[in-house]
Length: 270
Image 1: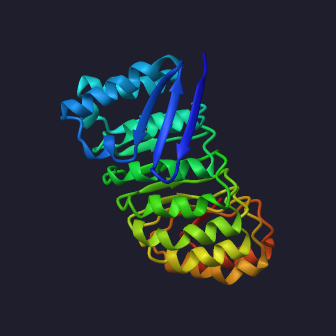
Image 2 (image 1 turned 90 degrees about the vertical axis):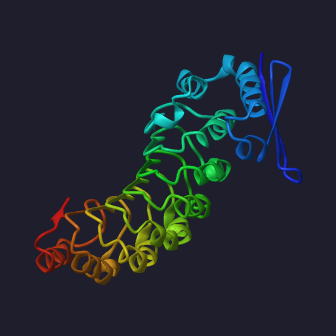
């Protein structure tokens, strides 16, 4: 019993072979034919029948919600701590588009890598009502910045975005920073433990200033130094709704932090 995934980039076809059964999924077949179509229902049922024996139970539940007709009432999907491999990503990609009214998607510590964001990106076109996205604790590196950028431009209603404990680095941060202007309603942004460094923060600043509703910003464990003083001071004094700023465990001298705190007395520094 085994699973094999192969891709033909020219035809945009993914072939998933499970127990000698081939399922061919084009990027348009399920996305363009809505679930109300009997043809589309048959495609999805056949997909599930062939793949379900090796699906994680939480992913099975998503298919079953669609078959029951409750997908339009589903507001939250929580797959935290569900180890997701490349086959699992294609399962999620297949079902995610049906949850049009989804408000919250949590993929904390699922093992997602940068290329998985690329595979999932198209599914986010349906999730226009999404308000909370949690990608914390995964393996999203600098390459993932550009794929993250595409997702953020499709989810303009986001209020919380958790990206802590990844490996975006300053290059990945520079890649996705401009897309923050697309989610100007954001209230919470967690970027802790990404080694964004001073260069990454410098790229974030002009885009963060558009986030007038931002209340929480997490920048802990990011190798920030004294060179970020002016940018942090600008951030703290410009974003009038900012309540909490996480700066602990960087390389910023305490004397500099005291200056920033003095300039922004209403902000809690953690």
